[in-house]
Image (cartoon, rainbow, N blue to C red; front, side, top):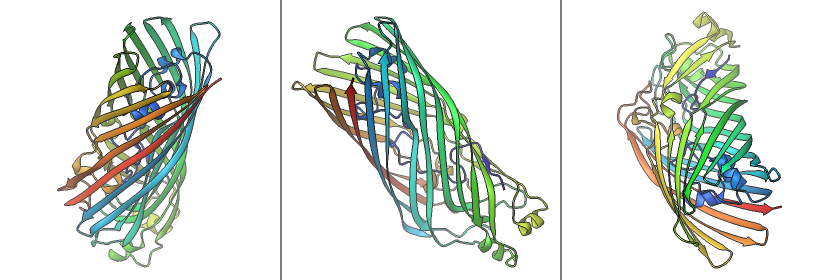
Length: 437
C-alpha cells in the first residue's frame, strides 16, 4: 500500500516540541533565540543570517564558524470521555551550525549552513476512545508523532552600499516522519469511520530558497525583510498496522488483520515572510521588534491520503481493489507572530538579552487533537553571551507557558475528540559557540 499525504500533519499528525508559538523553527542560534526570535544583524553570526535573513551575511567582518545545540522539552495533558489524565512527555536535542566568509575585498560574502527547519516529537500516552464502526477501542496506547526537517543551504550576501544589503539562499531539506496511533478513515466510501492501528515511517528530500534585504537609513536604525518559499518533500518508506479489532466488530474477525505497505508522504512546509526593525539606542543598548507571517492556510487545508499496492488479500477482496483514497480535514489558519527584544552590553565582554513573542495558534478547535496541538501562543526568553578573545559563547532559555484548548464538536469522524481538552507547554535551552578564524 502506498500512502500519499500532501501535508506535514499526515494522519492525525503533530504535537510541536519546537519553539512553542513557532511550529516552524528558523534554526537561529542562541543570540536570536534570547531576544524571542527577533533577528538583529551583527558582525559575527553566519548562523542567524543563513537561518533568518541572508542579507546579514554582508556584515561579517571575516571568516566565522558557529555551532549550536538546542535541547527541547514538552509536557502536556489530555482529557476526554476515555481519559482524565492523558500524558505527553517529549524531549529532544539537535546540533546545527554555519560557516560564513567574505570573498576578499569584494561586495560578496558566502555562507553555508545546516539548520533545523521543523522539529516535532511527541509521545502521548492515553486510552483510545471508543469510535469507528461498533465503537471499538485499541486500548491504552503510546501515541507517537515525530517530524524532523533539516535544511542544508548555501547563500550569498551582496553589499550594495552602506545603506542596502541583499542576500539569497538555496537549500536542500531532508525530512523524516513517524506516526504511530489509531487512525480513523475520514471519507472513503467503504471505510469512512473505520479504525486501524497504524505505524508509518518515511523520509525524503525537497528544495526551497530564501531572499532578504537590510536597509539602514541611519547608523542607529535598520530595517530588514526576508521571504522563504514553501517546500514540497516526497518522502518514502513503510506503513504497517493491524485492523483486527475493527474487523471483529463488523463481523469479519476471520479475515487477516495485519498489513504491510510501501509509503509515500508528500509534505508541504508553508511559505513565510519576516520583517524586523533594530534601534541602537546607544553604544550599549539595542531594542528590536519583528513580525512573522506563515501561510498555513494554503499548506494545511486538508490531508489527501492515497493507498495502493496493499498486500492483505482479505482486505483487498472486501474492497475489490488494493487502493484507497481518503482525505482528512485540517483547516489550519495563517499565523502571525509579533516579537520584541532587548540586548544590553554589560561590562566589556558580556551581553544580556530578553524578549517576548505572541502569536495565534494556527490549529482550529474543530480539528484539534493531542497529535495536532500546536497551540502555545507566547514565548518568554532570556539569554547571555560572553567573549574570550576570538571565541564567543551565547546561551538562551525559551519558555512557552502552558495553554489549554478545548474542542466541542470535532470535525474529525468518529467523534473521539469531541468534548476534549488539551493542555501543553514547552521550554528549550540553546547554546551557540562562535569562532572567528
